[in-house]
Length: 73
View 1 (tube, rainbow, N blue to C red):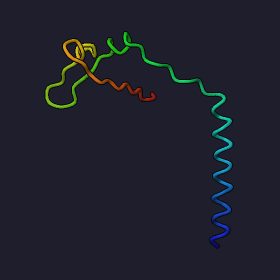
View 2 (view 1 turned 180 degrees about the horizontal axis):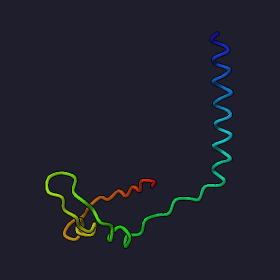
View 3 (view 1 turned 45 degrees about the horizontal axis):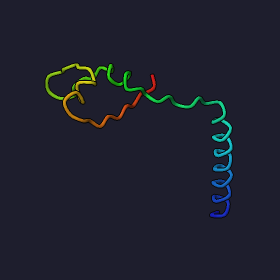
View 4 (view 1 turned 45 degrees about the vertical axis):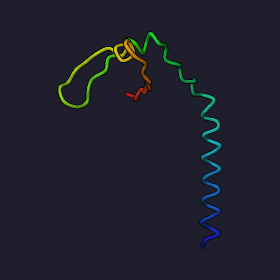
């Protein structure tokens, strides 16, 4: 039974790999965020009083590490 399970897993992995390979041809590459776009992004605090501010205030007085993640939808 182990040999059959290994064969099914191998074939399933092969099919998945082939489909993923061909799907990549139809996807557009992701765009890099520009500094101007990041500066104008509105941020909200998660804890305490809810505040909204522009992202550029994070690095106006000192440096900051920024990671931009866009959720689909």
